[in-house]
Length: 219
Length: 212
Image (cartoon, chains in turn green, cyan):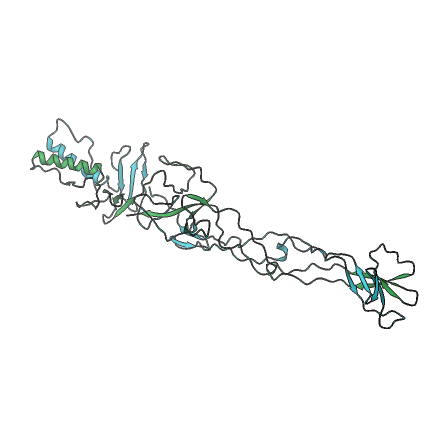
């Protein structure tokens, strides 16, 4: 680390030895980008670098020379989304993550939703959750008429005592002394079911996503 | 700002004071990253230039192909999504945004707001099904059933005989009907939960690029 930069390192009246030492100091400051735990004490200029060893961050003096900008840096572990199809030089595409949206992790200790997980992984699903409709959630509807129909019944027409007989089906031989009476039934419909209630598919569903974190430079 | 860098700052035939002044100038150019509103008059691969032009404030580096590429900078308001669970040195995780997807602002619905906010919801809009949206279906018959008929048969004035289940007794005569079903209902049409207006809960931001 070095921050002992001397702006006016050359003076016509200075002796050679101290002047050259200042040159050496300046080289070291430039080589380390003014690395130090606090900002350089010398007069700052726009564009001047400072590697902040406290924040572990390279900073650049802004254009109006009143603040520091952080320089984004990373390594192979720090993957970000780019709106482009190819990688620039110095970048590598991670093909292992595909066909997902981007999401921010929730509270990975609760596990309430799929995003309550560790960042840097895949979570969620493209299949929305099943929902079984209740009777109230099906629309009110009827099934129309079954059509006019009859209910035949049978009775014995002779003898002292007439009596009705359950024919036990259409194959029953009722011709020998039986007659058939018919009860006509009009067309009818059944009562409508359902109450038109709205439904949704819950609020715990999360689409298939690469789950990450929201980060910013510690400027 | 300083861009007066002299590559040949040492000349064995030059006066020493001249060379030393050139070196001092070079130091200042290096210290300010060649800060200037226009590019340095001389540049080589790897050389930095802090473009101080209007609306720029952008650090650039000369690439192998003699083009300038931008170096990304930011501050604590400039937050990005990272596919990682931890922050590297120099970075801090903002825990204020959780359990949502990433979106870009715009449109006419929940993402129509300033970036840096949340928009949308996780619950999709309610939707009551119409009869046309339920699948065509029938209700199976309840099975054969009987209709008891109040009749009086002579010579009895109060009762009639009947035979049912193999035994005689007094009761109403019955009408017998076979099983039957009613017509199908339902149109089998698809349905959704909000057409194009629904937006999932998201961190709403903007799409930006370096102003090279």
